[in-house]
Length: 179
Image 1 (cartoon, rainbow, N blue to C red):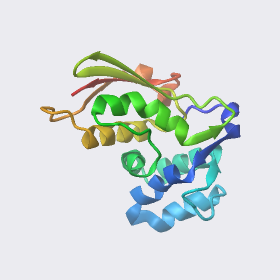
Image 2 (spheres, rainbow, N blue to C red; image 1 turned 30 degrees about the horizontal axis):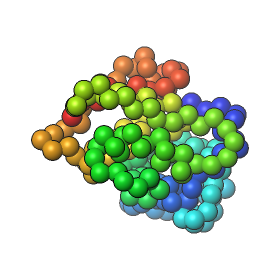
Image 3 (cartoon, rainbow, N blue to C red; image 1 turned 180 degrees about the horizontal axis):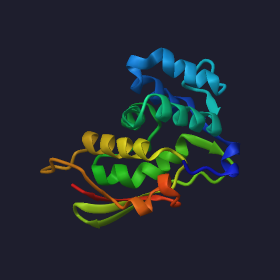
């Protein structure tokens, strides 16, 4: 997981972290235990939490529970995190994702983000250079697609070059999207 020391001054909004608990509905005790082990004893939706504690919790979830749960957390984020108003399509959701990311993080530090590049009416690339796990980002993108599924589209297809992945040391994951 890509992380730099400048992210130590960043906090994550509790509503966003709430997605972690909700996605782990069958592992609630495990989720609470993991969060507590990183200093998040009692999660409150309107409170802010240190990004390193949240990232360490994600790392433990990935190791102890697996990538499917990490992806499920990404799926749950749009239900809990703050998003800008006026999102009414998949494209507008993708364009607003970086703004939403910044609405749910505060502080001084380089936290990366999301860069959406529309190429045609049904193809785009999404560059994710944030410190969250790759499976989290995939779940987040899938959730926004499901919520704002474009008319006539049946599936969101990801093309992803493993050489362009944070999990292999690249600075960002670059997803080629087709819908």
